[in-house]
Length: 496
Image 1: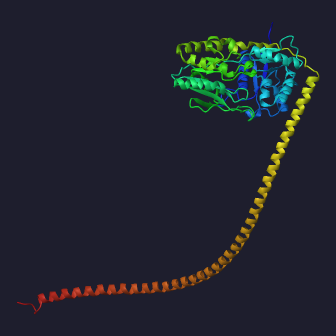
Image 2: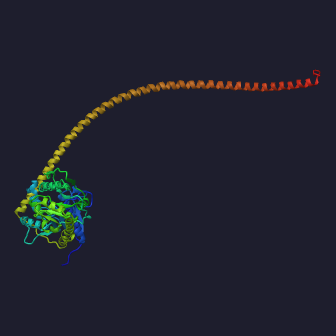
Image 3: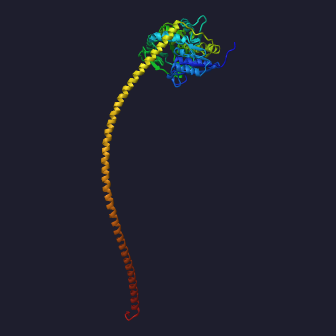
């Protein structure tokens, strides 16, 4: 068979893709791995996210349809059931990823009717359905048949979760047990954590490091439990994907902390394959989708506390199971195991769109839910607008009061300015008089100074004349002295 090449594939998802500092949701991580598998097969990949996940995202179903159509895709992969109906009108094959058992999660959130309606509408829009493990595919077949999909030939594709190539492993001196996840109502871990904490207390060493917290995407109602308050339980919250893998690689063992539930039986978790990719052995229960393939990469059993005690008792066994975990990640959860996705992109099969009273009822229900949601949104917007109007009225009243106060201040200032202006006029008049008097005084002083200078010059001339006379007199006196002296030398007055 000759495959087509270089298909343009649009992947529609929620959440931020890995690579930055923000935490990564499972859906965004799966979208990223789909893209990496298709890029490796030579195809062109574009990602579309919601507006709330970052700049450039789609804001509504209609906006999503416009953006996808503008890219002229050959194939579309949708990660969320609520987005699929908007893509039904795009003239290209559509794959819907059913990695999350949404119908089983919905009753815990009180949203079964809404999610069931969304699911039926989404299934009727797609051509193929992706699942993360075979058990999940079996669970969806009945729902697909209910939606009018012909299941005589399996319409699902098994595309496994992809394990990362984690950083170098470092086994800590004191035990660090990794647990984690969002605080979804269907996975309360307290019944699993408490006996393990008792074991650590008896040993006098070690801690549980919990990675997770409130859902990154979801409603605040989806937080029905909190972690136990214990000195050996450390909650580190959410972290970037790179930091998350380093955290896993530096721990001792990972513990599947979800209690028994139908959701746990069907959903292989992203953190499970991340544990394996980091060489972190996993402790899981027998009903986990991971249990059948785990082998020497961890421990399977119904008593997690006993398995933790066994795991912490032999470091050599921990190292061996760590190597087995990495090997399992490569052999069962690598990009090489995602070849079926590239095959579908290259040779897709279009399915006739199902029809029937159930789907029509679901469509009507979906539109009713959408109208109800829009009505609630409009009511909330109206309430916000009314609150804003009330706030604006209060602001206007405050501004009017400020305006009145400013007008009063302006009047006071105007009166003060008039008074200052009058004072300035009086001051100018006084200063003008003083300037005039000063000018006259200056002129009189100048005349008096001229007279004084003339008199001074006259006195100076007289003094110079007297100096000249004095010099002549002194000269004449000197000459007389000399003459008298000479006469004394020659005349009869000479003493003999």
